[in-house]
Amino acid sequence: MRSDPATILHDLFGFEAFRGVQERVVTRVMDGLGTLAIMPTGAGKSLCYQLPAVALPGCCVVISPLIALMHDQLRSARALGIRAASLTSVDADWRETQDRLIAGELDLLYVAPERASSDAFRALLERSRICLFAIDEAHCVSEWGHDFRPDYRLLRPLLDAFPLVPRLALTATADAHTRADILTQLGLPNEGLIVSGFDRPNIRYAVKPRDGMGRQLAEILATNPGPGIIYVQTRALAEKLAESLGGKGRPVLPYHAGLDPAVRAGNQAAFLASEDMVMVATVAFGMGIDKPDVRFVAHAGLPKSIEGYYQESGRAGRDGDPAVATLLWGPEDFVRARQRIGEVEAARQAGERTRIAALGALVETGGCRRAVLLRHFGESPPDQCGNCDNCLAPPACVDATQTAQKLLSAVYRTGQSYGLGHIEAVLTGKSDDRIVARGHDALSVFGIVAGDETALVKPVARALMVRDALDTNAHGGLALGPAARQFLRGEETVSLVLPPARTRRGKRSNAE
Ligand code: ADP
Ligand code: ZN
Image (tube, rainbow, N blue to C red; front, side, top):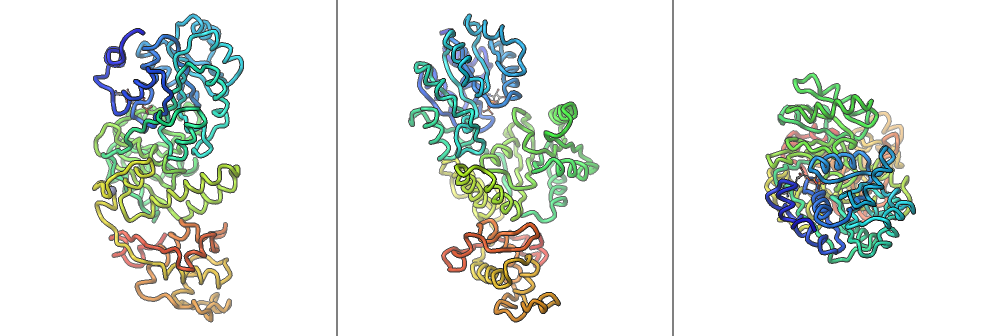
């Protein structure tokens, strides 16, 4: 052993103290115990294996899914003077790396899972001294995770072939189900689970229905100086928004995987150097980027999961200064997300459904957003955080169960093919040619919604879509969803959250 952990932490890494759970993780690893560390992005996961890699005799093998990420880590490890190398398809120095490994001249070896699971790699390790297996982005091993990679399943035989070498699995993103799965899949003991605190108290969370997205985003830009990221779902939207939001005084650039690599790298470098730039990006942006002074992260649409949202919004305020995370969503985001469930393998569909429901709980709650996020990660936060939209301006809640039932009946009685505009007209008794021609003015649901209740129809439709009681087809036609029956029977209720400002604005407020 070269030195004790505290000395290495100070002398090599230049840190005064361990942060959060780092010390517990490092101690377990140094004791040779299997460990699963769940630490949010930015919490300092790399140190948890880099430090033991230096302290223990032999090389630490790091399994990591992305070459770009690996090379970032490699650079920073080497900058510290750690003897590190990688074996990937883009590395030219394979021979040299293998020789160094066998000669005991490496502290860290980065490798992708498909390589790690090969026979040749196992044979190489058998001729070398290995002190630790670090499995980065360990959620990839679970079908419950949001990013399952079959290659990760092939790692187990390699790990088992070296029973004396401890294993450390690391991830930022895992709900309770995924955690249990990672422990099982990688053969880690239950008591090896170490979860770090997930709260990011300096981030102010806000969640709003989309209601004129361009205007909403322009408002965010106008009220939040400092670097910011806007996450969008498609490359085309990244381009379009960068174009339309630029020219309002702030530099705005797009970032997505479809850009020319040189342009992409240029945009990223410009963002890293800038103090007021806004990047309109797909989720391709942010991995491995450490810009501490991002002041806001906005989502133009629903993220893939709570984990994804936490990770993406978590790129704001790494420096600890106040930052804002705003999520704009529309009911069609949920409809589309559900449609995509059909495209994944059967074994993963239950996980997808759970993820969408969890997002539904986040956008629908009239309570604390932070509490929803932290509970998702298994924490027991206070009911109020004082730093999210709902804590700062508690919304009005109305019981809209009856309106929901009226809406669902109207959809059913009109034959489940008309859009919301038509259904709303039927419910509020607005007769027009189409309604008369179809005989919809003779239905029992015609004109059963009046007065203040009128303003509830659109938000109720939104809530029913989130909860899978209402579907839309490609042409915007509404149909009953699988959960509709529970609402019609009164087994499920709808409590609508109406932000104070929106209720006051009356009818217009409900325009999508
Ligand atoms: P993660 O992989 O969990 O996202 P990193 O390993 O990239 O996080 O670390 C995030 C940042 O925190 C890095 O800039 C790193 O240098 C810094 N860091 C890690 N551990 C400590 C520590 N004990 N004290 C201070 N800074 C630390
Ligand atoms: Zn709150």
